[in-house]
Amino acid sequence: MTYVLYGTEEFLLKREIQKIILKNKIEQYDINYYNLEEDDLKSILEDASTISLFSNQRIIIIENSYIFTGASKKTQDTKYLENYLKEKNHNNIIIFTVISDKLDSRKKIVTLASELGTVMRLDTNNLNSIVKDLFENYQINNSEIDLLIERVGDNLSLLDQEIEKIKVYKNDDLEVTKEDILNLTTKAIDTNIFHLIDNIISNHKQQAIESYLEMIKLGEEPIKIIVMLANQFRLMLQTKLLKKQGVSIYEMMSILGQKKFPLEKAIEKGRNISEESLFDFLKQLSDLDMNIKTGKIDKNIGLEIFILTYDEKKK
Image 1 (cartoon, helix red, strand yellow):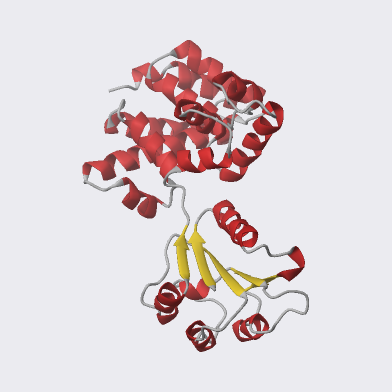
Image 2: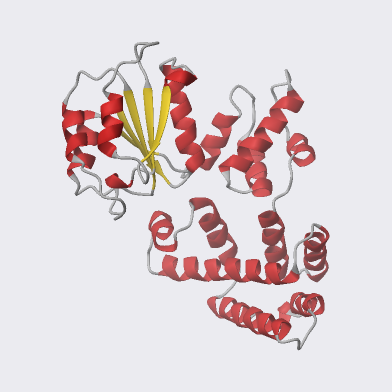
């Protein structure tokens, strides 16, 4: 059996590999790893054709399998793979992994892999469903899942770590509550930035300053906060302009090179602010960054002034 697993989230690729290993009851000593950017495809396939001395089946995992994309890297003779796919008497399992959001459908090996093997795209389009799956037999409502993602972000490796922490704490108590998430999870820096932006847009000066000071207390530098604010306001502006042109969120993911979750956040927050205000915010942040770097204003005072005077910038 031959698998081609692709997507931009490495966590999901590794998770799917583990599912295949468990499903086929393969021991660790019968798993071989290769890297197509370093190893020769012909040699790998020759190894895949050999029989294990210890068991009836092995798994060969081939990482960085760029040959299925349009990338031009180390030259590989894909005819060996074409012939391998056409032969149906292989006992071993080959898993190609590709860190890419798409394959090159014009390539013959992509067509053959689809027809004679299994090609699987793994993505985070349904993040809530993935998180629910990671909780396994624990009971958690969608509102709690939303809260968890809001606090931790959309990084699946971090989410998995936080979920494992919750599961260890809950033990035999299978119901995960809002209090569990608030008490047991670590709030990501992105969450603080979102809160700061919410308060800026809503003209809540006191809450905005509190959000800012909380980030400073966590060790974040004012310059980094300025960059993060600019990145978020820029993303809000980009999604706003693209949405006006009728571009779908999935097209935005490709155009902007972003995952679905941050784009949804940007669209949601962009509804409450005009394009003109977003342009103005970006200019103000750019000027502030320059003034700090040229020594015209202290970085802490400069950012606090920006936060406290944002109501004058709203159009």
